[in-house]
Amino acid sequence: MARTLWLDEHGRLLTWDQTRLPFASVPITLTDESGCAHAIRTMQVRGAPLIGAVGAYGLALAARVDASDAGLRAAHARLLATRPTAVNLRWALDRLLAAVLPKAPADRAACAWAECARLCDEDAACNAAIGRHAADRLRPLARPGRPLQVLTHCNAGAIATVEHGTALAGLFALAAAGAALHVWVDETRPRNQGASLTAWELKSAGVPHTVIADNAAGLLMRQGQVDAVIVGCDRVAANGDVANKIGTYGKALAAGDNGVPFFVACPVSTIDADCPDGAAIPIELRDPREVTHVRGRGPDGRVVEVQLTPDGVAALNPAFDVTPARWVSALVTEHGSVDATAPAIAALLARAAGARS
View 1 (cartoon, rainbow, N blue to C red):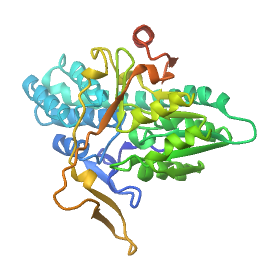
View 2 (view 1 turned 180 degrees about the vertical axis):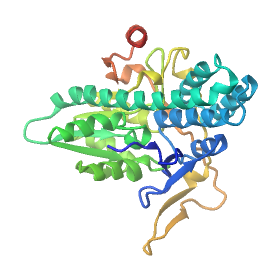
View 3 (view 1 turned 90 degrees about the vertical axis):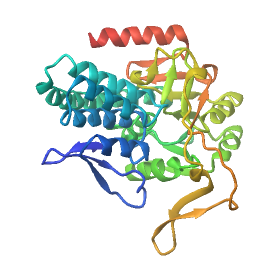
């Protein structure tokens, strides 16, 4: 599986412009801090792990211009402000800053660049491990005589990470092992990351899937057509509350009411030990135009934006919601599955810290 973030033969940093998918695969070159910040802010890059990686490279590129303590801290603050909810961005920026500040200013840019490469390699390995653990949780849930039926929300595939994905990593692993599998893909209004990105990834991988309207998920669960739900996340609080794309909470409630396991694919870097619960997670409010307008391809092949609402109608666009821990069946991490409880999460973080030392 090719990486979402890569260096070309000239050492330039490239990624896919996700605002152009699924209708065109267009790479963009990230040449400086402002370009990385713009890509994150406008969702040319999205997904918590990928945001973190691009933010880290943004700081490394800033170090080539001004490697002073003040310069790096200012760049850290500018990049951090681009997306407030996904904790991986802060985690990656803090990691870069901690790595480079002890170095002499002349050595900081090279140190930062090398640390970014390590961060990306670790993300790829982490996501592959999440995929193995997720596959182990999902495989036994298949019912006799039919494919395993899994529902997912938003996009937590390879293009949301450096490689493999988080929630989709388990589905890719099952498909690669020859498991009979079908995926219900929530469209994920208002930006339609499910209909546009998850469907594109599953189609490219040859995984059977069906796109559904967001409001159809509860009916399918009630009809017994969903064996499990698995989603990614942008932040997990210390008590197990989960912030993910708007609409996730409703899926968790429907899953709980119908006895459907609800799993959250959660890299340890997404757990915010300093955040006590979901009420402390900042919820990003995005442009109301994402609600009042929609982008798609017209009959002539051109990609166009059309208006859905009457002129002058107000719209509110929270990008995320919070699912209380009690509705989460398990957090599936690179270190295995754990309960979404404060003691289990604390033990997981201690185990992860021990593995790094």
